[in-house]
Length: 307
Image (cartoon, rainbow, N blue to C red):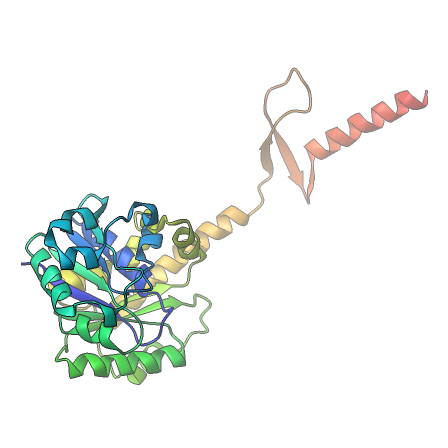
C-alpha cells in the first residue's frame, strides 16, 4: 500500500501548495507513482498551480459520494503524477469526512505516495487529514509569525499521535539576513529539516502561469533532494548538508544572474545597410558602433538636405 503524507502549516500563504506540487513532481521524476490531493475544500488552488483548472469536471466530493466517479475525478498531470481536486463549493463541514478518508485509503492501492495539500489553520479539515496521514511535512517561512504558527501545528500533529515529521523552510532570503537556522528550530522545537527552499521570483512566475512543474525539471529539483530522501527513506539529511544544498543552489542562481547582466563587448544585431548580413556591434560605455553608424548616416542625410 502507498503512504499518505500531509503537507501542513499553521499559517496560510507559506507555500504548502508550491511544496506539494514540486515534491510530487520530484518524486514522479524518480519513478514513484504519486497522487496530489487538494485538501482545501472550498478554497482549492492546487489546480491553478498545476495548470489544469479548465480540466476539472468532477472532484473528490463526487468520488467520495460515488466511487464510479473516481477515475473521472482524477486528472493526469504527467507520467507517474496524478491529481485529485477538492470541491470548490463545499467546505469540510459540509462533506462526509469518513467517505473522504475511505476514498483516499482506497487509492493507496494504486499509488506509492499520496500527498495531501492541507488547509491552513486549525479546524475540521486539518483534523480529518491528520487522522488519515502517516506523517507530515510542516511548511513555514523564516518569519517569527510563521514560526510560532508552525510550532502550534507541530503540537496539533503530536496530539494526533503523528511524531514523524520534517520541517520545510520556504522562501528563505538569499541575502544572508535571515534568522539563524538553529534559532528557527528552537522556536519550532523541531529536530529534523526536510529542505530549505530559497526565495525565487521564478517560483512566483511559474506558479502564476500554471507551469510550476516545469521549474522542477531544472536546478530547483536539487533543493528538494533532501525532502525526497525523507519521503522515500524516512531519514532526514544532516542540518549542514541541507544548508550546503541550499547554498549551492543560491550560488548557481546568482552566477547565472550575473552572467546575464554582464555587458559584453560585442552585441548581435541587424545591419543598417540593406545589402548586409547580421553583424556584431562593439559596445564602449553604452556607445555602440551601431548607434554611431546610425548617427553618421543621419548626419550625412542632413548635410545633403542642407546643400
